[in-house]
Length: 355
Image 1 (tube, rainbow, N blue to C red):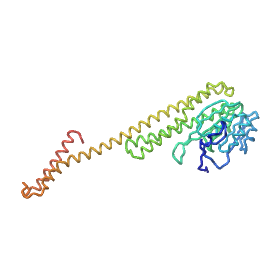
Image 2: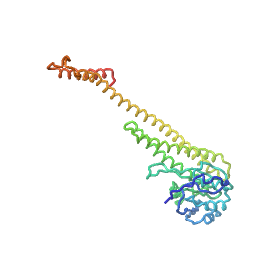
Image 3: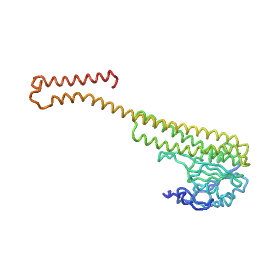
Image 4: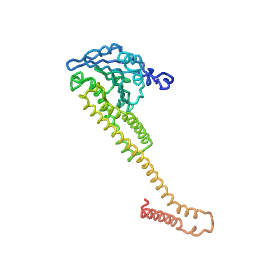
């Protein structure tokens, strides 16, 4: 269970660059380190208790995927930096869970940061966490904020030797990890689209105060998606332009396809953003129209009762010598005049198409 404590950025104030301070939710459970070694002929997977034990596999000939779930144990990052000669600034970015998606070369590896989105079924909202990758000559080291991700299908393909991943190098594994995250973006966007359709129907049929709250909540989620996905365009484009020897020609086509998918996601997010803005306008117009209808009905009722109230006021005065007051049928005539006058006004309103 997560402790409800968050390390803020302000706690790093005054510290020198490269200081390893975790920025995010602090947790009490141990970080989980999983080491997966594979080549076309063989595969193994195990959990280890230290970064030194995990890095021992890097020196072998097979491809290695080291995955760490949990960023709160800073000593793991320090051990990674020592074992793979990774700069402190890159390690600092791993611990900063609000890092903007980016790619940069650090030592003998490529460092890639992006966000993973998924649907939180309990809270019924879009949740996210930061994923950091270090791509080396025969390894990929990935860091996640907590256990649970969208890589289960990829793990299954590696275990069962389905597809190309066992036949390709670590750069293809890095592509496959990013592709799994981007593919899950589409699932999230489908959920956003379904919610948009529900809100669209609700706005037209039964707009309420809860409706505008749901629209604003969805707007915040889409804005957060946009803020996190837009920089990923730069990452995908930078990979295609990279001259790093860690990225082979064999994976260039796959990264180009990944770039296309990212662009599709960006276009979809922009479309949803415009649709939500349109929904807000429709909601405000709908509420305004409903208010106008109510005011029109109240105005018509008031207009009808103005002459009736005048008549009632005249014949309600307490004078002894008022005409018609002693007429035997005066009461019935009075009601007849009122009814005829009210009907005549309603007929006139309908003729003018006011009602």
